Structures are given as C-alpha cells and as structure tokens.
Length: 106
Image 1 (tube, rainbow, N blue to C red):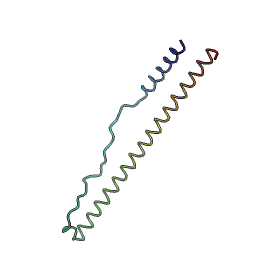
Image 2 (cartoon, rainbow, N blue to C red):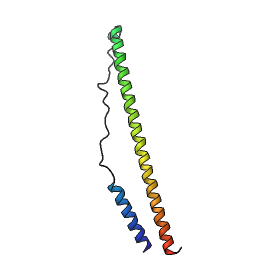
Image 3 (cartoon, one colour):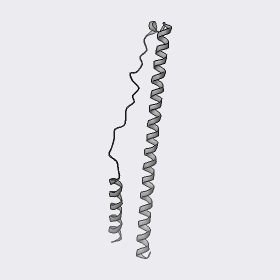
Image 4 (tube, rainbow, N blue to C red):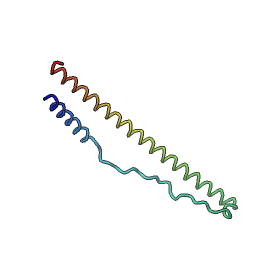
C-alpha cells in the first residue's frame, strides 16, 4: 500500500514537472555572413586587398567567437536549470519518503 501511495505521489510530481516544460525550440545558427576565402597569393600581394581580407577575417572571427560564447552561456543556463530540477525532485521524493515512514511508524 505504501508503494502505491509513493508511486502515485511520484507520478503527480513528474506530471507537474513535464507540464511546466516550455515548447522545444531550435538552436539558433550564427549570423556571421559568408565565410572569408583566401583570395590567393597573387591577389594578396596587393596591400589594399590584403588589408581588406584581414578585416573580413577578423570580423568573421569576432562574430564566431561571440556566437560560441553565447551558446556556452545558454548551455550553462540549461545545465543549471536541469540541476535545479534534479535537486527539487530529490527533495520532494525524500520528503515523501520521510512522511511515509513517519506515517507507518518506522
């Protein structure tokens, strides 16, 4: 009988947890534009073209680094939310188990 009550309580908690989940969303892709392409050795001999290529590459690199950093922050936030959910679940189950044991006189 105790196990049935515990299973029912766990099912109720799990149902509430799943009901709180926001709809799944796609992971955003970077918006850094076209990948810079090396223009070739002959073109790079032009100082003006070399500087332009360096600017393109630096801009692309900065954008990609910012994108990766934002994805890392999102991943860290997701991990923290998952860990908080695990802690909440464990405390609820522990409390129910303690109450069940107290009610049974153990």
